[in-house]
Image (cartoon, rainbow, N blue to C red; front, side, top):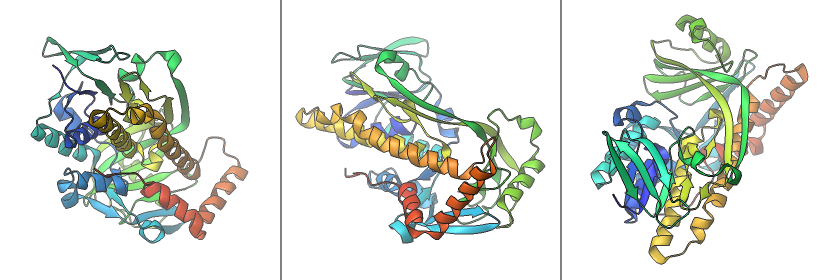
Length: 391
């Protein structure tokens, strides 16, 4: 097989990259190690910055999202038994969109297949060849047959555990990583959301987040140890602890649990995000703590930057945008890392936290809800820093 851009990974980064390339007439082929059913059922983040939601709509992939999403004008912050509102629309004129990542993946897969873009699921034994040359190749096995895609460029969108980043020589890459001394116990439950916006809770027992996926489907999280034993958490204990950390600021509706997982928390960045004709995008290059809701938005931003660079190359042969891809993306990535780290530090109680530390966190929370300047900074970062989204 031959194409202009070979893309490894049918997650948000790879699908959005292929979608944007199609709009500029650049063909691509996507390969994915998992089945289509797995990709479309994998529950992940579900919060879109305003520019990202606008991009889905403007590029023709957001029709179902417009019908089914929820839009939030801000967030609530709970501490000390009181609930405080941070109004993004009032502060920065922006809002965020709640729409499950798995639903976006469904929409983008359907869009690309309708466009005639091949998506080759359940590809195994993937390996890259010639990424330093002008015509790299992707070798893989599908349905027991050895396959090869010859292309001009490769989009490495195969996630943190994928094969693209390890293909780059180790002495080329610089890795920045932080492991946090806590995780999140997350549940998916059939219940009405506790409020009309997300609630970020700071409590002596630890952090809690009250989110939603639909009018009758909630996604809640509790701070826990990174290796928490799920068997120690009955449904009753989870609901009781959620209610405790909510601090009586809202009545909590309980419902049957659909999913119960523990996720570790980490920050990860690799530099550079490109090597030869291989360009990393999304989780293959960076991971952020979920506190800042930046993972899927960064994947879309990478895809946007790379599609613009490839479009310029095929349109007039210029390479300056391709050469600056890593630098352009990392500027946004590090700002998102800073914000996610700040949100994580602000709301989570750390092991061996001293009374001085906890008092400083409380003072910062009080400053945040009392100072318009502090609230505006949070709103600006949370709702999304500006980005060129012209098509």
